[in-house]
Length: 175
Image 1 (cartoon, rainbow, N blue to C red):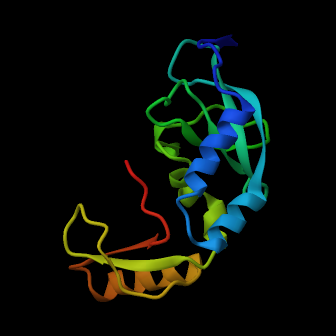
Image 2 (cartoon, rainbow, N blue to C red):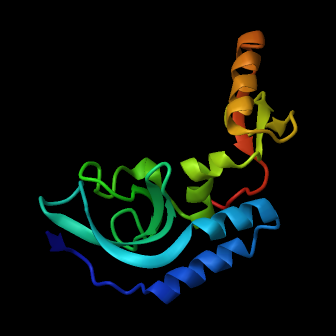
């Protein structure tokens, strides 16, 4: 593998970035959950599928959700610096590259709330929207991921003229 960029991040700098973001969360359920999944940042070379054969970049795995085999990593190259936080498989022999662009985010917490780990918390609500680009308005109380999606599907069937989505209102990250 060919490493294309110099490594400037460190375990301490990654921990500081995560802590900065966690300071913006007031919900103790989320904070406790994230902190329970954080690991000592470890650097792994991950294949970059969009360059020359053999290209790889250093990615710092910082959160590990073992039940889903999905973690959150920080990488200054590839999709970074614009979207340095990515959802990656933790272990295995398949799918161990950096993946596709839709799995990379500008903020750690965006990656967390898009990860399977966040679905373990009962923080999900149904949002109703009348405008295509709008997240909409929360119309239910918080519930589990599964119950919220069941309600989304029920409402979509009952009112196909409106848009219903499953999301959370704990965190709305900057783009």
